[in-house]
Amino acid sequence: MDNTLISVIVPVYNVAEYLEECLSSLENQTFSDFEVIMVNDGSEDDSGEIAGRFEERNSHFILINRENGGLSAARNTGLAAARGRYVYFLDSDDFLAPDALEKLYSNVNRNALDVLKFSAYTFHDHEKDYSWSRENGYKYMGDYPGVYKGIDILHKFVGNNDIFPSCCLLISRRELIVNNGLRFQEGIINEDNLFHIELLALSERVGVLNEPLYYRRFRKGSITQAPDYCNRIRSMCISSEKTDEFMESHALFQYPAGKWQILFFIHEMIDNWEKLTADAQRSDEVQGYFKRVEPIAEKYGYGGNRAVRLFFLHKRFYKLYRNTAMTAKKALGRL
Image (cartoon, rainbow, N blue to C red; front, side, top):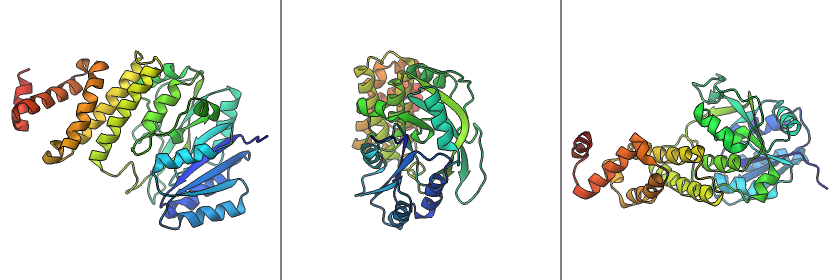
């Protein structure tokens, strides 16, 4: 019987500059009973060779090479190979504190948790300006001393503006993921948002360790930093649809946290739509994404949310009269 306690899944794609630091942080952990599943997602630089060297010198490091399919596909590949009681995802351009896995396992095991969330330092590429604050991202402002049902702590997170959906900032029971068939949605970006709400909504016991054990790097060229606005709109559209399906199938559609998540996705669509050129805004592709989510927004009560309501009023006005954006704004001002 395999007694591995934690499976650490590390998707790898063209990160040769950072991979040594990432994998060394795992090699130097104070905790020992874990495996590292490195998924080389068709890297075109030296990332595969670097990962291979770690596999050669560490019996619990495993390298899987696959054709490029994106971050979600790489994580799903790692999940399929994982054997640990708990699973953790580490981005290959970031790294962990030396005692991170020890502290995470001690907490999640002691409290019999389905999910344990924690926080992170942030820093800029090629600098050591480590910061742990709300201004830079990952510090909980609310107080979460107990063990909570997942859907309940989602409500608390929303109320305290403490939504940190990154899967790199949680460790979870693998059986919960496997038994519920949870996977990362492939072909989209910001996939953590969708995975996060599904995982927590299914969790009976969730805890929070408000301690920075993760070092998150801000760098140009990363997926989260690339300004592909149309792709973001498409991804948020798909995430809205998948969240709606999940909420319905699990009888959770009445919960405020689910409604908040739907509105968040649609707000993200709007924010990225505003950054497009006028021609791109009017393209059939982009218009099609908003047409798909409009009934979802209406279903979850966008009428009570002024920003979303005005946006869809604007869309209807534009479609009806084919007029300029300025005319639409004047019309909205008279509503």
